[in-house]
Length: 125
View 1 (cartoon, rainbow, N blue to C red):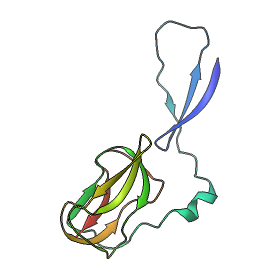
View 2 (cartoon, rainbow, N blue to C red; view 1 turned 45 degrees about the vertical axis):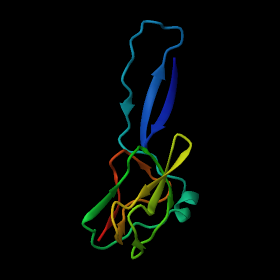
View 3 (tube, rainbow, N blue to C red; view 1 turned 90 degrees about the vertical axis):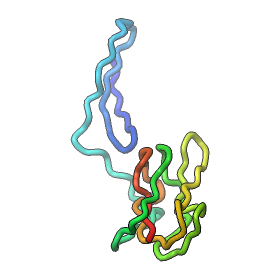
View 4 (spheres, rainbow, N blue to C red; view 1 turned 180 degrees about the vertical axis):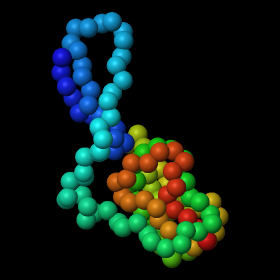
């Protein structure tokens, strides 16, 4: 048997794999109490989350992936269809666009964050 530590979307799992066993049964992984901290070198590259009041218009991810680029910053004026955040999913860059004209009220993610479909990325006023 071999033990592995696997990280999926920031969650750390310890799994045990038994070689040569072909019973078809799959054991559920055991989740560790706390995920491992990101390397300190990655921290300066991430933009800080905006603090302040959130806007009334939500900009949400259409797919799960990783935040690739912040195309706007708090206070920027955007038109309907302008890219607000770009996510990377399956080696593709996918712009997440403003659903209507407005001003960016908050950015809720940082570059490199793993996100799920429907996650709040930003808000507009």
